Image (cartoon, rainbow over all chains, first blue to last red; front, side):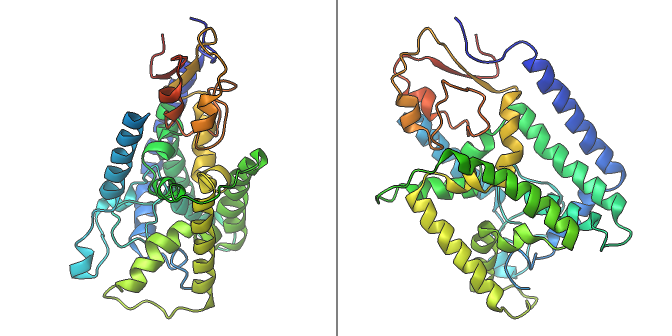
Length: 52
Length: 281
């Protein structure tokens, strides 16, 4: 079957990006990235609901 | 096609409930404060919604840029940390399945699918409107919040109006909110405009506005989950294009950044020329 899609390096690029993203998430933990997101998310975002 | 569509509706409904399960709010009038609020969902779901237990990736990304702003002092490390966290979280999903969450999970995409079913004359969107979502990502999510230290995409976001402002107005929280002014009415007008557009056009927000789609779309080019066309089986009947909610010809470019991976085309293809999966043989 001849498929119209880029096959060759595709999987290796996916795995590379997955690894880089996992690394980015891992690094973000050092400076409390999830904590920063959490602290912002638990307050009711007045911008989101138009009360400014 | 009905089987795929039914499965997609079930998935979208379950995702909507999974992301917004905090019905305790109606009794306590307090929003969820648990640790899941630090986790970004791969869909547009406002974290101001009183029922949600997760975080919005676009709101969080935008907040990173406001923290990075020269107007905000002493928050650079937190800004980079949350920037890497959000970008990494979205990238993990994108590298695995590309834009599939847009087609199968996103609550705002689900709403668009439902409203488009209302029988009215329909409007086709010109192809150039797809560039709009990249503009919104660069300007309203990144550049303007960086320069002004204000979350302007959130201020204008219709998902925030629908999932945050409307429920909080109808069922106010225990802690009093500031009084509403003219800006709330502007936000409601934007929401009304988009709701009307959802009835008239198929997935207009996903195609032209959504910054999350702008981030996930390019991942279709290299994601582990992929689509392919068997050129020998394809009869160029055009059925795939007819059923595509974003009006693309998948046979031209199976890795298109516009493709929501909803798989309607694959099911509609009479010759079985379209393949999708983590392994295509």
